[in-house]
Image (cartoon, rainbow, N blue to C red; front, side, top):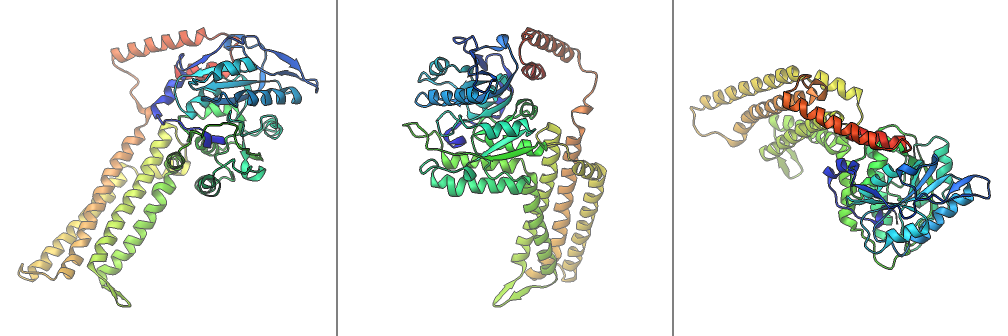
Length: 482
C-alpha cells in the first residue's frame, strides 16, 4: 500500500542518531552470500547475508523492504524479489530493515535468504534511512513488505536507473490500482491533492508523490542528508531530489490489495497532515511569501482608499471599521513576507534548502544598514503623522473629536510606527542569520579545543575500525557524522 501502510513517530532529533553504531545492527545467521547464475548468464545474488566485513562483490542493486511485524507477507515478497534477481541477471541483494518486529519477521527473512538489519530508532523514515545506509548496492529499490507491490517486475525501475536517473518513482494511478487496494479517501482526495500541492510548490511533474515503490541512486540519496523519521520521509525524498535538481523519472506500477489480515498502521488524517506540513515547511514561498503579498497588497490598497473617504457599495458603507481590518491585513502581510525571507535564509544556512543566488543577493541588499534606514524613515513619518494628529486635536481645543476623522488622522502614525519597528527588528534578525557558521572565530577556548581534539580522535578511531571491504559510501557517511 506504499507509505499508506506504515506509520512512524516524528522525532527530528533522531536523524543525527541514525549513524550511531547501535542504531543499525545486522543479523549474521545467514552470513554466507548465496550466488546463483541466472538464465540470462549474469551472476545474481538472490540474497546477501554478509555483513559489512564480508562484502565480496560490488552489487548493482539492493531491494530494500522496511519491516514492522510483516510475518504474513514478508516471505512472499522476498521470494518475488529473489526471483527477479535470478530472472534478470542483476547482481543484487534483498535487504530487510527491521524496525522492532515482535512476530518473528526477522527469522522469516533470514530463513528466506534475505539480509536483515535491525533499526533501533522507530519510524518509517528511520527504517528506510538505516536500510539505505546499510545497503551494498549502487542502486536501491524500496517497497513495502505487505505484498501490495510486485517485486518480480522491477525492470522499468532498473532500466531508468541504468540510464542515469537519480530517482525513479512508481505511479500507481498510471499503472493501475486494484479494487480495495487503496481507500477511496486516499485514492480520490489524499494522494491526488497532496501530489498536486507538491507539483505546484516545487515545479515537478511527479503525479504520485507517495508511491511506496521507488528506486534511486544510493550515493545521490545519501548526499541529500535526509532527516525526517516518520511517514513524511516519502515526501522528503521527492522534494529534496527536486531541490537538488536530480534527474527524476516516473514509471507505471500496479498496486494490489495487501496480503495482511490485520488493518494497516495508517492514521489517514494525522499522517496526511504530516505530509502537508512537510510540503509547507519546505516551501517558504507558498507558506509565507504568497499569502503575505496578497494580504499586504490588499491591505495597503484598502487602507489608502479608506483613509481618503468611506466607500459605499449598494447599501453597505465601508468606513473606519474596515480601515482597521485593512491595517491589520497590511501588518500581518508584511510580517509574513519578512518570515519568507528569514526562513529561506535560515534554511539555506542550515542546508535544508539549496543556495539561491537571487535570495543571497536580496539578503545582501536588504542588509542591516538598509533595514535600519528604511525602518527609521517609517518611524519618522509615523512621528510626523502623530504630530499632525495632535495639531488636529489642538485645532478643536483638545475637546471631543469625531471618531471617523480622528481615526483617519491617527492610523498613518500607527502604520509608520509598526512597520518601521518590524523592519528594524527583522533586519537585525536577518543580519544574525547572515553571520553563518563560516564566520565563527578560528580561535576557541582551551576547553573547547581540547573537546574537539578528543572528539576528532574518537571519530578517526571509529572510521578506522570499519573494514576496508565495506562499501565506501557507508564509510564516508559514518565518517562525516562522527
